[in-house]
Amino acid sequence: MWEALFLLLPVAALSGWWVGRKSRQFFWSIDKEREPSSEGAEGIETTLALGTLFRKRGEVDKAIYLHQKLANKPNLTARQKIQYVYELAQDYMRAGVYDRAESLFLQLSKNRGKAPENSLKYLIEIYAREKDWSKAIRACEQLEKITHKKQGVLISYFYCELADIAFQKSQHMIAISELKKALEVNNASVRAGLLISEICITLHQHSKALRYLKKIAMQDSGFIAEAIPKIVQCFEKLGKHNALLAYLYELLKQHPSINVVLAIAEQIKKRESEGVAANYLAEFMRQQPSLRGLTYLVDFHLSRTAGIVKEDLLMLKQLMGNLILSKPTYQCIQCGFGSKQLLWQCPSCRTWGQVKPNQI
Image (cartoon, rainbow, N blue to C red; front, side, top):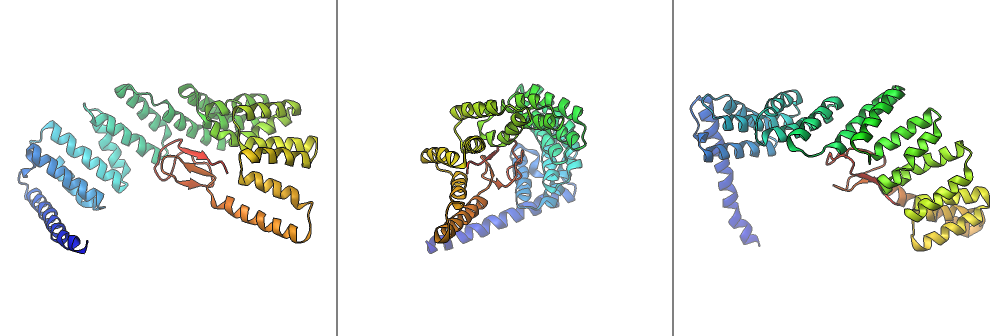
């Protein structure tokens, strides 16, 4: 193994020397305003590869310098010009100089071929980073036109962002208007349903809130945990306690989960007794064990024990609490990023709608 490593050392040194030599040649030819040997197809690929290498290595200033000089060279073909400008725009993007990147991507979005599609995707990312949701929506709509691929799911998140801003300012009607647009382009938008129900609850429109909340299970059953507290609140505000329990039992048949069972157990506890609720929960736990369910049962038995047994149960409860705290409440199914709060865009892989509640 060591012999193989020693044999590879000269190769690594040679490749490093080659890259350094090539970069010096390119920069020398550019600085001298000579026509670089990159005018042919092979030369273009070499130049682009060198610039990409600089960008990947974090030497963005070198990549910008290289592509900027080449993009401004006279006598470039249209294809060469587009390629160099596209690389330069990516350099600015990597450097975080979003205003310059935006300007170049806007320019490229008016060309033909693949440049407009890729440029619009970068523009959407820039607008999302800058939280310019209106521009992001327009860029998505442009992307739809040239690719004929629906962007409704992504657009719905941007409408929800606008709605959230309006809601924080207590501009409820504006927020509802934006959320209805979100549901028009994506009627399976869980985020729109949750937010519009929250606004309805704020406005004491509990029946209307319930209509949106009941759709959550059909849109994405993974978000039932987010909807249940609001569902219980709405039913109770309307004084429909029996209807609430009937709905929870029906929901459990369609989407068995510890969240629904715990909500039913709470209702049983109010109507009958804590013991009946604990027995109901224990029966479910035999088929589907859960840390949260087990914590509920430990709490039930704590009030009925004393001495060493109570101390043991307290220790068990603490251990389970630590286990629950150690697990992320939400997790991105794309990259595995964990969080204690619900994020609609994953901060790690930057995809939208991939962060889901964990069943604990």
